[in-house]
Length: 93
Image (tube, rainbow, N blue to C red; front, side):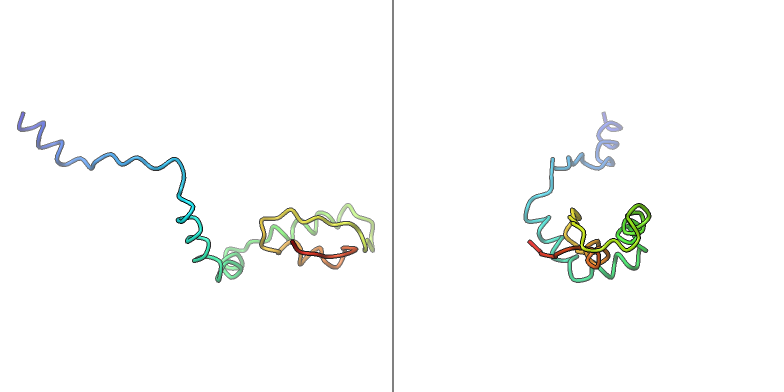
C-alpha cells in the first residue's frame, strides 16, 4: 500500500487538452504575432508566393497582363504582391 501511494504521488496528474483553443486565446495569439508576421516569414525563408508566381509564369503566355487573378491566400497579401502586375484590376475585401 505504501509503495502504491508513493508511486501515485510521483506521477504528474493527467491533464486533458481542450477540444479547441478558445476564441480569446486565438485572437490574442494572432494579435501578438501580427506586427512581426512578415519579418518572421522572411526569417524562415518563406517563399511560397514567389514559387507560386514562378509556376504560373511557366504556364502563362509570355507577356500575360490584364488577366483575371483571384488571390485565395490566407490574408497576408504576399501572393497579391507578386501577381498584382499581371492583374486586370485590383481590389481588397
